[in-house]
Length: 125
Image 1 (spheres, helix red, strand yellow):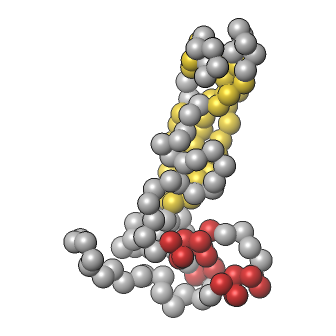
Image 2 (cartoon, rainbow, N blue to C red):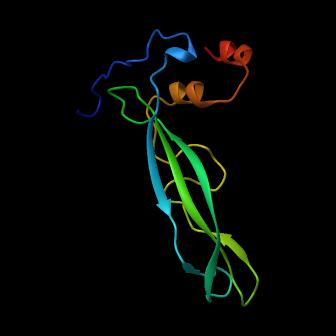
Image 3 (spheres, helix red, strand yellow):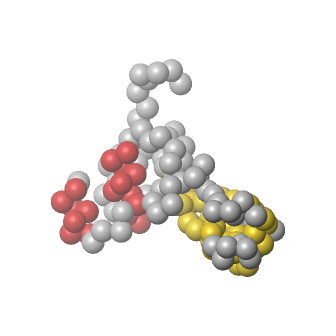
């Protein structure tokens, strides 16, 4: 693939959400026994595990998205009492549901992954 090369959209013409390709599932882990506290720097032990689901547009040739299920650890500092989760900024920012990977064809991904009512999706099309 060269810059500026046209890649046809394999999902073009699909009007029903049920007909879109099913996402490929990938599992990732960010599980650590202890991490340094961001406030005081003392080693903080793990007290819980949590999961987060992230959506990625995936491969542009197949049009199949990727769902990342990330298991991560939560830590509590015994010195200052701060509770924090493992840093996952290389995958996504703290609140968004999508990965932070640059997206081409972003409008397709917005329509595919938004949790809007069908009437609003129809207005976006």
